[in-house]
Structure formats: structure tokens, C-alpha cells
Image (cartoon, rainbow, N blue to C red; front, side, top):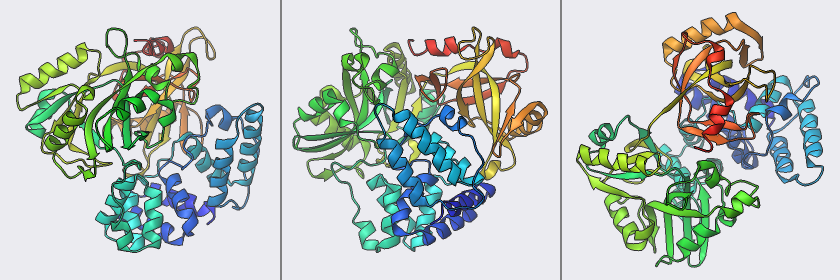
Length: 511
């Protein structure tokens, strides 16, 4: 299939607010794909190609010059093969080779394809084709029940592979997809609440557990074979030998555990999040990574010695976890008392952790889904940043300026002109309809330039942003990226020179 067909579908999906219309457009695309293209196309649609991130950033994209192709010739397979080449091009001289290959691909792409390829490379595909909508489209295109498709996707952790199976096989093949030790499943997700009391009022009797300031891991063991996966299902076994050793020592033969891992200091408090993440990156041979010891902590057991526990209540799963790994359990307590929940939260924060997760004691493990059974409660940090640009919205936000590009003040000109601004992230979360309308009216009045999807503005608008923290990043020039940023309010009372500095944000890496 031509890549242009995929781009046309994403444009159609973006242009409608109707979920049914999105499903219909995506189902039509899926029916027309060759079987070998299905998984690749799904990965592009949800912004997760099978190769993962391939190390292309804004500077690489911005350095490309030349006119786009007049007619489409690239195929879905061409883009997948190109990502393979980027992912495997390493070593001396690789930057020049990657740049040459990227320029060559873009020269073959139309304007619409260039924009789509750039968003795939930067991890910024937002077509409204979220997993739920695409799962419905897979069911519609294949004629199989949506519940069957959804469960297969959850248990396989692979929406693209599920799509190919659904479109090429019968219902029995989909039904045969089950929990397999060694194959990661999509992790269960948590909703949010302002206080532990609020969370407990939703869940009822719950396990109130520390929300560790670590990295989510899913660990599979069969005999002596242990495999470790991230929350995005990437395998990192070879980078976490201490986690492997800890799980290998448990008194089980087969097990699947859900938890977090983090680096601790001499007093047992968590080290900065980025020290933990240093073990997950490609530079695990660095001095920091070599010296960082990670401790695993688990809060759920999905399988123990031949027994699947996904459909057992949390109370049963916790009992099994306590039996096999009592020393590695995340701290917490089961309660229906709000004062007790608040006390556990205070203890977690005093220990340097992020907060708590309140989990209904009768809840099942809903792989890949976010619901009211698990609710996280964390304190919020707010910072004043400057709007550098704004992207046009999609779906229900079609026609409104939505996704904000956020910059921190660079007073010393470390990354440009003194007193300028350096980009540290994006967000479209927290924007009310009133704020969307205001942005759409205001930002064209201070526009400096625009592309098909983005309006760049004078850096004069201050916005208060809530974040859970920052992390080191090679994507943005300032070296940091915001974690879970959301809009609190615009600060018309503040001047852009009053914004928080890049130094302030970078200091959070050491906090």
C-alpha cells in the first residue's frame, strides 16, 4: 500500500469528531492493507513503530531542505524498511549516514508524507486513532467480536500483531491468545485523585500502596530464564542483572510480576529518577549506569506456577505475592479508613516516594486499561512557562489550537540568545473549551510563522503548568523534558521574563 493512503486516512480521522466515522475510516484502511503491511501500519497509526525510537530529533528534521515530491511513490513497507536502517546504523560515521538516508527519504515524500514521517520519527502522531478506536476498527474490518479482539491485544501486548491475526485468521485463533510466561502484557493503568480520601471513597476497601519514584517493570520467569520488560513492553533484561538475580532467587518456577525498580541511597531513600533510568538507556556502559544498583519492588502477581491470576481479585493476587516475595513487596496496607490512607500517603512522601496508589481490594487486573479500580494520588509541582507554538487539534478539538509548545527562560543564553526561551515539552492536557477558544483567537494575533499543523507565536504568553517532575532528554536542547505536564491556567499577571528558568527545571534532576 502507498504511504499516501495511510496519510489520507489519518487526515480523515483527524478531521472528524465522530468515533463511528473514525472506526469506519480505519476499518476501510485495514481491509485494503496487504497482510505484511498490517502490523507496520498499525504501529504508525498509534505512534509506536515496531523499531521504537530511532534517535531522530527536532534538529535532524529541521535540517532537511529541498522540495517535496509532486506524486506519491513511497509505500508503507518503504517507511518500515527505512526505520530498520536507522535503528541498525550505528558507530563511527553513522550520524552522516543517517542524515543522508533521512534526506533521501524525505526527497521521495510528498508534503503530507513528509509531515507524517516527521511525526512518526518524533513520536508525535496524534490522529485520534487511539488504541480503543483502532481496536474497534480491527473488529469491524475482520468481522470478529470486539471483546475477543480487545482481550487478544491485551494479552499479547501487540495491537499490530493482533490486527494481522484478526484479519487473516478465524475466531478460534484469536481466542487461543492467552497469557504466556515470557510474553509481556499491557500493564494496568491508574486514574488520578486529589487526595487518598477521595480515592478511597471511589474504591471502597483498598490496598493503599506507596507510589514509588521508579520505573515500571514487568518480570517473567520460567525456570532460570528471567526476562524484564518496560511499561512500553520493550525488553531490558540485559540491562538489569540485579533485577534478574532477585527474581531468580524467588521460590517459584514460573511467575509474572508487575512492579517498579529504582535506585536507593545509603539511607534507603530513592535516588533521582534519572539515575534509575540511566540503566534503561543505550549508554548503560557509562560510569553512572555501572554504579547504579536497582532494587525491584512488586505490587502484583499475574501468574504463579501454572496458575493465571488476571481474573482473580487483588486480595488473592496480593496473598500470592506475599507468599513468594514478601521482602520485595511494595509497602502498603489494606484499609477502608480515610485517616489510615492519609497516614500511608504521608509516610510515602516522607520516604521520598511520589505518593500512593489506592487499589480496590476486589478488583481484577485489567491489562492495558485505565479505570477507577486503581487510583494514584501524587503531589503536584507547578511552573510558569512560555508558549512558543501551538498545534491544531484533532477529533473533538478539530478547528481549535490545542497542543502547546512550552519554553523555559534561558537568561544566560546557554541555548541561544540571552533572555530567550528553550523548549522543554508539549501538552494539550488540562485545557477547557474556554481556554481552547481563547487560544484559537489569541495566538494567530501574535503569530510569527506557521506550518500545516503548527502556529508559532511570539514568546510573550505565560502559562502555569503542573508537572510530576522532569527527566533528562536528548529531544529538547535544554536537556530536560517535562513529565506529565498539564495546563493549570494562563498567567496574564506575569511577564515572559518572569517565567521559570531552564536552570530551575534542570535542578529537579538533582532534587
